[in-house]
Structure formats: C-alpha cells, structure tokens
Length: 628
Image (cartoon, rainbow, N blue to C red):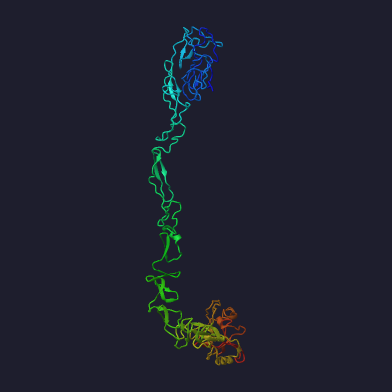
C-alpha cells in the first residue's frame, strides 16, 4: 500500500533539457512544509516537526523511490519519501540541481520546477532550503534551519521494529532528529522500541508497551498485599513480593478448630458464627440460661448453663423460700439456707405453732409436726356470756358480740318545762363483749316513743317521769317563772260576785289549791299599755293606780280609749291572760268600798264601781294565787 500525501507539488515533470537526458536527480519544490504538515508526504500527526520531501534515486516512475531516511513528521506512522510497498513516495521523477543557467521546462505554465526566479525558495538536500538571488538569478547555498522531526531508528540509523508511536505508550516513544546546517538530518536519538517483556522488578513498568503495566509478572518486587481472612477472630497479614514470588503471610491470625465459650462473641474458627457449639456464654446468661426462678443465680460454665440457689434462700420444689421463713401452714418446718437449701428443716421443740384449731389450746413443735395443749373442751367458765362448747370458728369461749345479755326500759321527759310534754320511754339492749363471761359489751337503744300523754295543764316530772298539774299550763297563766310570781286562771264563765268568790276558794287548778278572787290591786299588776292621765298608748307600761283608801277611787285610770290595749280584743292586760270578755263592764274583785264592790275593766284600763246587787248580776271573773 502506498502512503498518502497531503498534496503533490508537481504532478508530473516534462524532460525539457535534452542534455540531461532526464536521468539525474531532481528535487521537488514549490511549497515548504511547516510543523504538523509535509509538503510532499501529506499531513503529519503528532510529530511536532515538519519534514521535507524525500529523495528518489530513480527517475520517473521507478518502482523504488530510493533511500529516504528522513521523515516528514508522522502521518499514522508513515514517512515522507518512503513507501511501504516500494513505490516512489513523490510524484517528482528526480532532483535537478538547477542553478538558473539551465532552465527546466515544466509540464504546465509559469516558472518551471527548479528554475531560479527572483525571490523563489525551494527545498534542497535532506531537509534544507535554498533561495534564488533576485539580482543574479542564481540559487543560493543549500542550508538547514535546525528544525526537528520525530524518528524511529537507532542512532546508527537502523530502523526500529514495529510502528513509530504517535504518542508515548508504556516505555516506548519516538526519537528526535535535527536538520543540520548542511541540510542533512542528524542521527535519531531517544527512540525507545518495545522490549520483549515488562520489567517485574520495577512497579508500573510497561517495557513491552502493550498498555498493561508489569504484564506477565506474578508480582512486582517489594509490592505487598493482604493475605489471610478477617472473619471472626482471624486477622489478615501482609505478603511481600521477592523475585516474583510472594513471601510468607506476616501478622496473620489463623482460625482455631473451635470457638471459645468463655468469651462472648468469640469466633475462633472464623466461620462467621460466634460461639458456635456453645449453649451459653458469659454475655448471654440472662437470655440463654434464664430458668425464670427468682432465687437461683444463673451462670454459664464452659458453655453449659448453671443454676445455683441464691444466698439467703431455699429452693424447695419449685418454690423460693427466704431464709428463716416457716413452711406455709406448718410453723414446725422452715428454710434454713445454712443447712439445707433444697428441703425443709425442722423447727426446735420450743417453737410455737398453730395447727389452725384454737380450741385445742397452745401448740408446740415436735419433730416437724404441731402438738396440742388440750385434747378435750377448753371452755369451762360460767357467766352470762360464757360458752359451754368452744367456738372454733371464733377461737373463743365467750358468746359473740351479737348475743344480748341484758334488756331494760328507760324513761325521760320530752321536756320538763313545756306544758303538755309527754313522758317518753325506750328499750336498751346490752350485748356480750366477746372477751369475757360478764355482760359488758355495747348497748343499743330503741327510738324514744311517748309512754304517757300529759294534759295541757300538766308538765313532765323529770325525776318520777310522771305527768303533774303545773301552774302556768293550760287553764292558768303566771306572770313570771320565779317563786312568788302571780298566777291567773283563764276561765271565761260569768258568775255573781259571791259565787265567784266561792268558786275561786274551792278551785284546784294547775295541781294547786289556794285560789282566790283577785283584789283590785292584783288586777292592776297585769294592767299595761296606756297612760291613764293622758290617754296615750305607751306599749307595756301603765299609770293606772289605786290609793290606799279605795273610797277615793282610781287614780290616773280614766283617760285611756276603749279597746286599744295589747291583749285579746284590745284589752289593757298581758296577752297571756287569754280571752278578754269586753262585752261586760268588767271583772269581779274582792275589793269593795262604801259604795259597793269594785271591779276591773280591762277594756278601758279602768276601775269599775259595780251598781246593783252583786248576787243577782253576773259578770266575768278570774282566780289568782302566788306561785310557790
């Protein structure tokens, strides 16, 4: 195959000089290639220098282009002037050293190739240039300018194997040669061709330039690598390469046959399963060895769970019992954690016990069993609350607190001062205390209820709890509660004066005798409500008086208006005096004058002189006496 050129300077040459016979050398010219391009040999890729046209030692279309060792840069590894298939690398037939005196005819118009023309330059030698003198029209000297190009040969000019690399690859790279002043290329220096193999003693070496560092090397000297495994307890080590052989694994911790059960998480066999074959480890005792028994200390001994009874406890069956705790229901056996942690120990013979039966007396321990004080009935006492048979349910020889042992009737007055207050009674019931044979327990009472109804004239005697007639109750009224207070009957009947005197003298009222018809002075003690002189109503006071001589008549008692008192129907006496008969002139009194008997007129707050026969005329009256 023929290497391609970027463009040809001359497509053909015409032999215009017969004396030359067109048999000499002829140099191509027309354009000077610069860095990155070859005027004759096409585009140069990556060489960084511009080569010039090669030299062909054969005229015309010779199948051999001659020996051109100069390279015009690189174009996919090709060289200007050299053809891999033996054809000429240039379309120029040869080289003509035209000095201007022998013009050479070209195949086209213009100045023929090699012809000296003013200012014209052309390539010469291996890599030089000459210029036509504008005055003499002769070519100047052929000289190089020092430019460089890539090369692929030894310094002795021997071509290197393979294709020149466009760029460094591995250890391989193209060399450099310089265009010298004599227009000849210098020797090629610096080119490095592929070696047969990479150097295994240098890390990263790619001497065979295949793009793979240390290709074919088992290892590179002094390189290190991790060795062994890092699973479980195992630990990786380090190997070092010496003469392409990996050394021993230094620092490696290898697997053991079995995991240890003494260390939680141990994976000595390095299979990724911790504590393989262990039923437990110190770190998982709480879960692996938990027997759910509160009084055992769970542990792990070489992979096997252990359960020892905790200090201060007994494990009897499945029950945890604290030290010195008695057996439930049998005080004669107990946990003695210092003697036997898995069985009951017998209590001492002096230990008290209770078999649950009270009636057989005090119990004591004997050989781990409870013995009894009584073999028969323990209840022998007598009394209102004593039991003849022991009550096992209550652990008692006494009647319960619900058993009554005494009843009584109690009396009281509903009131000792209120009139008509009844005598009341209730029943008291006393019960056994439950702790003694005597009747000393609590007492309950029924509700108070009337037992005797006292009349309106009676009050209840707080000592005898009987009804008694009492002054100031019912048909009598007393102007005060103290001894000596004046008491009055409240009757409303009409009698003659003598009959009224007799009625009072024979009267028994309020449980008392000794009544009499009032004097005019006694009537005036209950008079109230008017100023007898002015007639003004004045509340509870009175100014009506009688002199010592009744014949003188009433004093200051005549000016009060009728019916304006505070008593019944407007009478001038205390309201406690009850009904006032204001349809008659007045009330009889024991007092009399030379003119006849005197009476009291409560309607007008006045003393009345009664005309007529006192035995045939009937008027109202009241009886009175002092309170004892």
